[in-house]
Length: 357
Figure 1: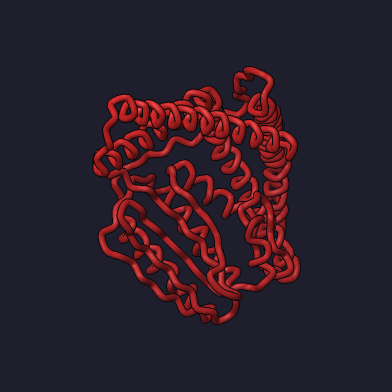
Figure 2 (figure 1 turned 45 degrees about the vertical axis):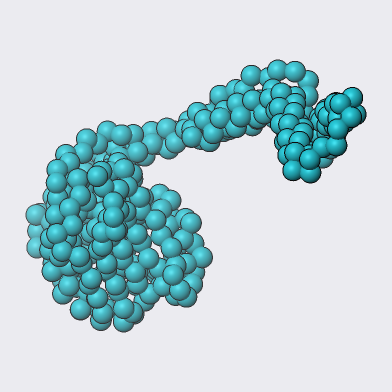
């Protein structure tokens, strides 16, 4: 609301206060006059206690008159503010495009028009973003299908060439590179298809009561040799017998992505801390590791599909889709996956599940 409009609303409020103060003052004077007139007509001197009680009663009645008058004069405005607040809350909860009924020509009507304009613009932006999201998903799907056919042909011809004759060690090395890169491209296409399915809600979760403590311990046991091989100090703090309702296959995928991410991108010989705790109705799975300042600066983009902090990751293999897939799986579980930096050169990924008590 513009400053001039706020000034007008303030002047109106002050005017209402002054009018009711005047009415209350007149009522006070009238009641005081009537009491005085009573004692004058009866030619009696009032008892001090009775006089004080009468004064307090008149003051109390005056205050009641002021409050009632103020409430009646501001009732309509307060109702408008309450209705406007409720409508804004509905818009904030996701009902974009919702409009507020505009009545009158006062400042609140102007505010309601501004809220309607904001709601319409948010709705348009949301629809535009959803349209772009659908286009991206369709692009991923088309790319996956269009690239898979020629890629399958390439793999077939490479295998065919290998069977035609004996190859030298150098030629065999070249074919091994072709195999590796072909497999890498096929993995990327599979990831693209997974992203498309997850973001288009084509995945149906098979949830059941799952001991997430045991699951995490098993993953740590499987990956511990790889962390040790790269010189990482993996510290584990897992609370026992923590259960969640989840799809085991998809949840394993989330944790493997996060642990593989730390395995690939943590700073050399940096400590890696894995924590699993339950606090009330919230289960938290957290993985922290040392990282570069550039990665910390890019935290807001780490969950974007295909984003990679190239300079800090160097030649480390990866397609940039793992974190995006992990977060979407957590959202499908009605949970969250966030990233934060508790201190310099340290990054933490935190998966949270809300338990239904």
